[in-house]
Length: 598
Image 1 (cartoon, rainbow, N blue to C red):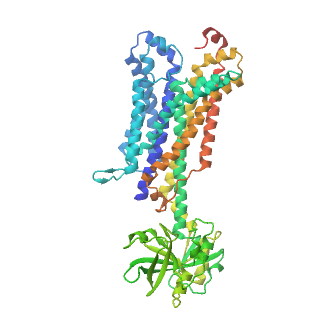
Image 2: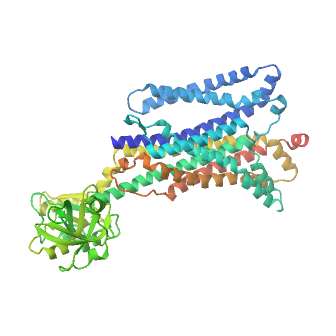
Image 3: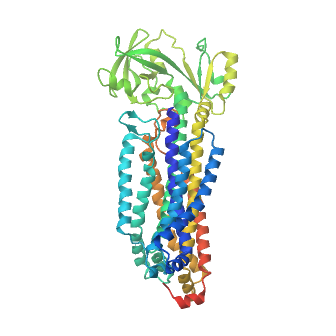
């Protein structure tokens, strides 16, 4: 149940990011459609069409476009995804279709209510924001801050006055998308400031391309800000998804090492391991280390019952060297035992803090084991130790020191750890069946495969991949639509620049300078935003349910995944810039001579 709940929380959070990107992409496509029919709208308004008629016609057009597409998508989802039918699916499909139609209507609102002389001017939307837009952006930022506070306190699942909720709280799950939108809006607002500074700096350069390109970038308005917002969200989605996914994978690897304690671990069956049994002679085994497990009383008679692990520490250091199970044993734990000195010990945090008095590093404490009292010197206190139950009260001591203090006991091995990087648990199991039947061999690779092979874990991985692919697809659509729209708006301006001697390579450089700073800004802020949101929401996602263990793992960023994402976006932008430049060269030079630069 915990794993399922975690998977739901992660998938819902990851799915809302592409939904935000899709909304921006649909808005850009709607803007492109409205711009292409600007003259038709002007003619219709000039012939007496009212604002209501214009809005109703575009709403009807949006319904005719969106409803069939949403119906096909709904039927495809029902056919491809197994499970019981739900009325919520149909409702959400209807909401998506209605939202798309409403968005098309809203994009024509400004054209429908503006004076005709302003409608006839083919220029990008004014970058200046009115009071309503500023109020909307402030509302988004306030909701993001408030939602972030609640998310940090309650987690994605949330809670109610009656206790913990049974499912994912959709409002809290939308907080990461709100944070991304808020950061994007702030970025769009502040972006023109460095452009003006850079434009002032390059004004004295030879050539008009750098200065003119930066000035173009600063006056793109809504059409220019939406692609930047889309790119920022897309990069953030990729960084967030890769960070969470890599963190889960590394957490599973750490959990497998924690569970097994080495490449392989052997536990005896009906008979204990013989004292002269050398596990290093098994096929593929390079080294072996034994551990004796018993119950002891910390503090002497009547003390706290703990789980004692007497470990062959020098051999275990060899077995785990360079692996994820290496416990980095203190030197005193690996030195030759002295029967006259207190034996070094590593205590669990629970043992050190929950006793009658707090135990600190350097303290000496008595322990009763096998009806004998021995003295321990605490050399370290840890939350966990390989192959030791983290929920138990435990102590780890050197096996040689225990044998030196109590020399009349055999202290047989409860577990033998093996260093066998090239051997499988099956092969060693077959070899042990001939030597000591009923021995159980556990492999770290097999445990890791079991952790990663669960359907929910694989579903989360596939969900992350789909989220990133969908976000990139919508980013490609939004960017291409925006640059095509900008090229159409500035076709006359571009044609006029050609009459002034600007070549095709200059036009391409102009487009690169115009859109390049936005791409760099969106990339840097998007990566930082994705990693930051992952760090912020990770405690609320409950990743331990997917990892399969409570092992603490630091968030990890995979540069290769982020690099592939950026390469895909660069390819999309290259295509979009080339397309917009080609469209700009199609403008009539004669027309530009008559019209001039607007």
